Length: 263
Image (cartoon, rainbow, N blue to C red; front, side, top):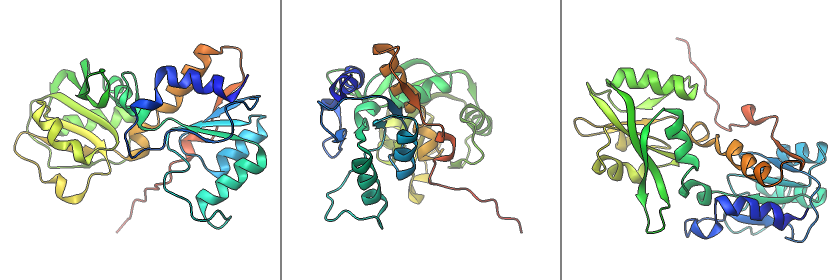
């Protein structure tokens, strides 16, 4: 098995060519010709993920978020990205990321969100000529009020915290979703007929919403984490007997920590 074989399995699902122009999906460390003994799939590429891969006999990691996103002017152990690059190279670990390539394809990140909510008649929110695009929109099994929708979404995603605009009276039947930072698509969701838009990283002023429309921010990690299982499934579907694993520390890898303050 070679790196290019694993890359081929992933890109058959999420072609690198569909990624956003600003993105850096693809093989970030290693050669396509390198031999692969095992693959570990995670969400973010960190020193801890590289160490877990090495300890499990894996010399390739696949993540959603790219380790190298902006230009690196120096690589050193004091910087989290630099330390991870060093760990990967020293450990002989190839690193691949499927970021917006996995966001934009049907059955990708936002589609997984829609399925989690039980949405019906799911469509891509911003579809291009090839049928790919950002976000999804669909119909709830039954109409909900804003407060009911908060409970419904919280239970579906296993959340302890939701940032939300003022709950509307309803009825909410059409829901748009977009995994990750989706603040710029709020108007697209509303114009597509959604009464509720669920995404992450929403800025303060975007919570001022017009009548009959509601925005929820469920967290970046929480909205996208299902892509790990999706990517792992693509590898196992192509190579069912190959050593491929999901990170055992995924449930502890969210860099955002929530604290409840008691007065």
